[in-house]
Length: 325
Image 1 (spheres, one colour):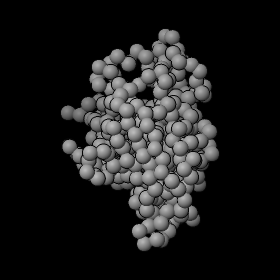
Image 2 (cartoon, helix red, strand yellow):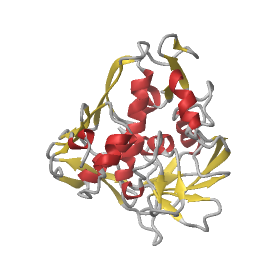
Image 3 (cartoon, rainbow, N blue to C red):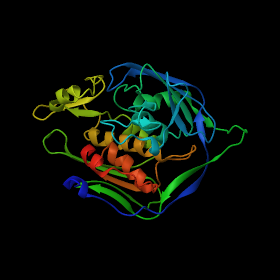
């Protein structure tokens, strides 16, 4: 028998969307970028090296020791069992995986790094850095962008998915919805009633590279102090610290102030959403739909499950999604 939570999971039929020409060519990095740091969950010292690649290749990962087994940054590779991060796995079971990809993918999607080869060494995680996407933005801006060409030396026009009809995915009071819009618009809400310093927050913004770089990328990941011991007991957040995450106590408020924005936790959820929605990209095209996306109390599992519904791949494990949410 399905649980009450699973029965409360609802969705409408797949939204009508189409791939719209943007009038811009696909891009890639003009130079290689390498960043090192601790992995959030493993605690290992890891390095991610970003390299230019051909138009039409899209964004993909190669993990050291996996014999050139490429893991494409596509929603079909998102692991629904991943906890507290987005994990990509080439195939179920023992296939190569790469964890905590959302901050890097968020920066690449927002800054239009459409095609990129990411080589990961030292472990199977992307470096957490300061817990935001700000250092990724700075690294990408330092390297610069250029028009990508395919293996035949041809430029490819970039396409973007555009929503024509509303679609939503809901579990209890958690939901993600998309509505037709002439430009990307994101509205996100969170609610932590037991943590007064966070409480209920909403943030709404349009999206372009400048807005992202100044209003979204600097927002850091966060956690609740009272939950840390259990998470570490479960083998998670071994690399988490006051230097790479905001920590908030239910009774004492922020343990490592100041916050960069009054609503920094909510802005970080938008950062995560952009990274997760980048997985809708195919063959070097845009991942984030041209739509007004509204989300409330969602997370990585609901983000990626929404994309599966949008693409018509209705393979959501409702029990698992209910547990993750």
